[in-house]
Picture 1 (cartoon, one colour):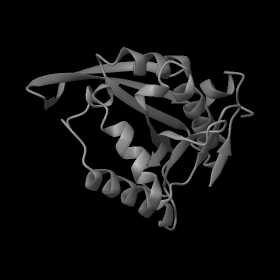
Picture 2: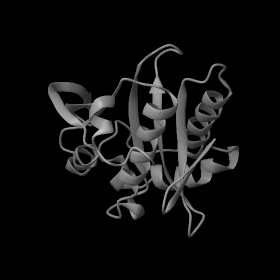
Picture 3: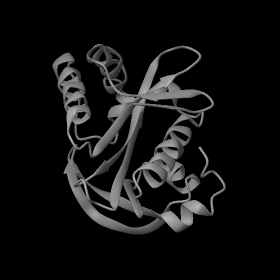
Picture 4: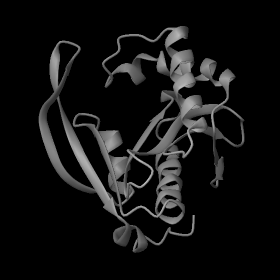
Length: 184
């Protein structure tokens, strides 16, 4: 599966992508809001293996695609829509980006394309997403996508010696239709 945007190619993962995944998942800036303190090569291989298995599911319900920078050909992250079941009308949006690619609008561009795919091609009614409350950059991405803040779950997760709050966002198909970017 492939989705083209102005600057990105969102594509299914291949086995060799583990090296690029390991490179960005090992960056301490990436690790800041995750439970992990480090990522090994085996962790990255396992992560990509899970994504490859998602691609083979029939029917497919999880579309976690690699984000490739079109000009350089580099894999700079991933973005996806994940349904709980084939007949689900709701899905969760998730993304991660290599820290060296932060600040360029790539997460927004990739997520916007995935949202359009989900509403247009998967006929979803609702998309939800969450982020660690302190991850203001991720919250800004979700808000730029038109997602509405629906709540804050206090002390949702415990890792790195402390409790973390989560922000929860949602977007309805009717709200997406009003964004002006439905044709992407």
